[in-house]
Amino acid sequence: MSTASTRLPEGRYGRSSDERADRKLRIAAVVLGAALLGLVGYFAYHYVFETKISAQVITFESSDNAVKVHLEVHKDSGTDGYCTLRSQAADGSEVGRADFRFDGSATRIDKVVTLRTTAKGSTAELLGCHTG
Image (cartoon, rainbow, N blue to C red; front, side, top):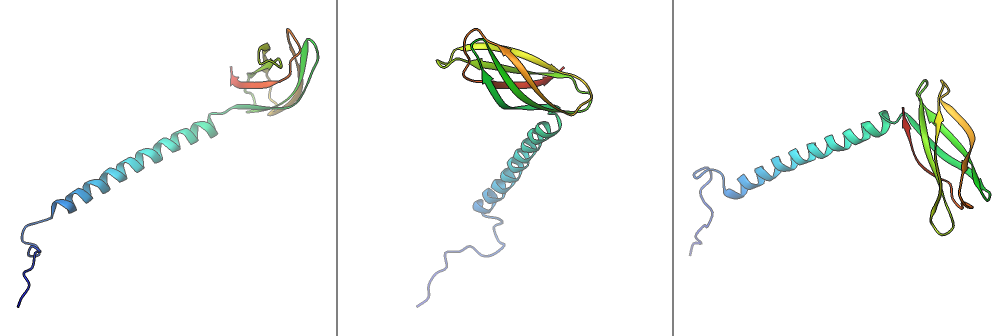
């Protein structure tokens, strides 16, 4: 007794629809992967190379009408800019906000700035730094 084969003869009818679909899926995956890699590269470039000024709050000390903030700023030589600080009260309301300018050729600035407040501030938050 012989068993009948359910496979098509090799090379007689061309590629099957599954093989064509697999090829299309591979092409789509390569295109999407390349687009994702390009997007990650774009954001990495702007994060690393376009950031000309950055800062961090080291410590702060609050009184009834001011907050003294120890701020460390890193910037490119010759780049002028400013950093925005704010302070909040214990209940979360904003009691002070100000911009502090950093000019000159120094690349690292370690400075204590005074942020005037309308009430006792319990925080000193760096909102961001910008060139200009």
